[in-house]
Image 1 (spheres, helix red, strand yellow):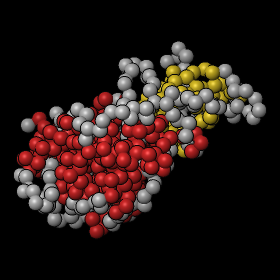
Image 2 (cartoon, each protein chain N blue to C red; image 1 turned 180 degrees about the horizontal axis):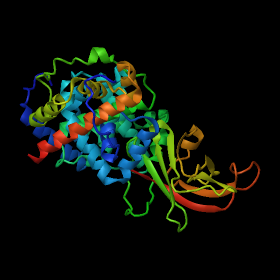
Image 3 (spheres, rainbow over the protein chains, first blue to last red; image 1 turned 90 degrees about the vertical axis):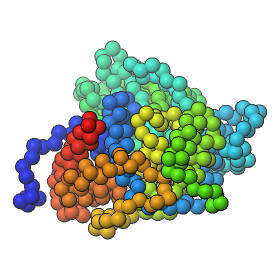
Image 4 (cartoon, one colour; image 1 turned 120 degrees about the vertical axis):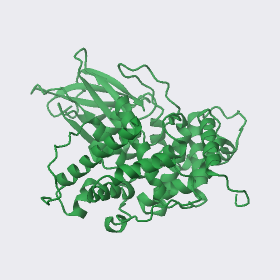
Length: 258
Length: 195
């Protein structure tokens, strides 16, 4: 690296536009990738720059040789669309199919739904929620399986908040508790409140001032369904002890699909 | 399909633009049209990044199912449909690599680096020629080493760590090489936009 070809140059500042470029090139991994996806959902400038790079890099794909996928790919596409239509409107079976996709979809609907392994992940995408500073968005019935869900959990009137990003395909959740500080006496525990009225699921103790990612167990992702929300409770250090009720709720929020 | 005369690329582009607009407007039959017109190119992209037929086919399914779900995401004022779809497909393939479900690294860097023949296949739907010329020009303005690393990232889905290992340099060195390259690239592309 100390070769003569290295002319001294100023260090590159790694600002948002640079991160957008790295992301567009495909270089981001792990938490940085999760953070970028969360930012894409909430920061229009960042999203714009990411798309700017995507668009500029796109012509390079012309150098990638084309290839013919097998015929099953199209069948799979129509089957998945059918499954999603079934989940989105299980009661509305009377509308006449008006096109090929819907028609093929209908044929495969039932056997496919029965075999759908990630139904929970698909349902999770139907979440409707709010975020401060943004007008409520009419969520589409389903969104991309890998599109992140973002929740903002404002902490009282403090202006502090938790930012929670969940990427369904990766089963990973990113919790950013920037600005929170530990008081040395309490911890805060994040809970998922399932819409079906079943028990709260702990998402763990929040690490003040940190961005932390966690892999969610299937039992938790299965409860990420329509109407699920998040609450933050105040607990003794280490989180809620076994056999004791959870502490007081200090904040709540819900996921919004992006 | 074989009996049908091949449309000129202008016609193909126009038909695709039209199908994208119809899909965004809720006409689901447009999806099949888009699939017919773009599957070869998009599958080629997925296959290149993932290096595995099955994974690439799964990624391709994701692409079109996502497209069906969110056709309204496409903004025709910002990108041509094929440029947008190509980026979309590559992003999905990279996502698959990064979520750890795929081993990836289909082609070794040494093998991939030359890419001497970048003449696009004649019968494929191509991204805008002017735009293509510009990115090639700007990339070509970088030193060979930086250009090679940026290409390896783009074409093989290599991470910083993989690139650093292949080049046998510290991770931080690779990062600053590429970031400087990206900074220059951005300046060059922006200058072309302003012109």
